Length: 390
Image 1 (cartoon, helix red, strand yellow):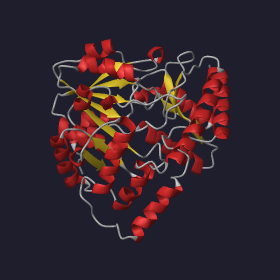
Image 2 (spheres, helix red, strand yellow; image 1 turned 180 degrees about the vertical axis):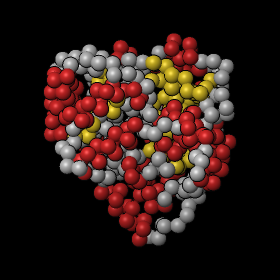
Image 3 (cartoon, rainbow, N blue to C red; image 1 turned 135 degrees about the vertical axis):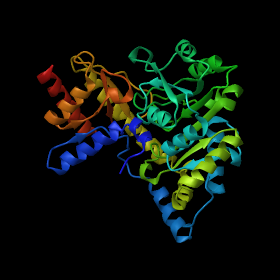
Image 4 (cartoon, rainbow, N blue to C red; image 1 turned 30 degrees about the horizontal axis):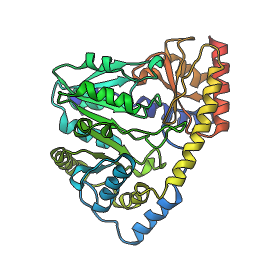
């Protein structure tokens, strides 16, 4: 059997691979502490579970419209209006099987061979792989701790070419937790004025934000940005609904929505009906108390972990404004993040993701979406590892 050539340029997810290896070692009896997965350790709020049960009992178990049921799409529209003052209509929304699926649909319907997609690095591992699979060209803008891993308008302007089709923003960011302010988004919008460049704004972690900051959506900073922005979001992270597979896009361009519906209709059809009905309550804000409980706990864990990491000689860590990751700088001990993470797992049973997987060497990603006791044990093992090896 010959595998299609298109698969040769597609790399497996390093985060998934490390998570799987950690589980395998744990199954073998090893004492493994894993900080590699981007998944909340909390359960889905009971109100969402109960809504799913009610949907089953009510017989909502059939096919739905490819792009989602009207009630759920309307709940998305209401959410975007309530949270960000944005005005969308039913033909501006597509619900897909997680934000990853939304992104794949977008790249497939937007990118033609040779089109360039600007991606700030560090980046979520999936972005460049999907761009390449769609025959596009990822163009990376490197960032580091000095700018809190955010691109500057000058960097963006320098990266734009006649082939630039898309700027991909992720705020709050996976893997760094960086959050673009309203002023920073306005400045980015100024660079894009007069171009046809689309902004794909992945805002999956918008509800997980710290220190009393207010999240700003890319589409809300100006009329020009609203017209060029496609917002990608979902319920996996903030509402602890990773396994439910619910993502969506919002765009003021019905032609783009029609193209996504056409593609999705031939690939997956609708998101499962039960998830769609259960998601309405989360979108309407009825799970907000549970979301806030999780956010507060994440903030405690962030503060604890940042302090502990910064006490280790040779390691440093900026305090992220959102998400539930630390992007830990290990340049004081090594530039080889793959070897560091591999040896750490082998010697100390601690699983973290090398920065190289996110396009930035000399760092590792540490997920604090787990309990404080495990975080304390994990960082102590990392400290012992660094002291023993470097």
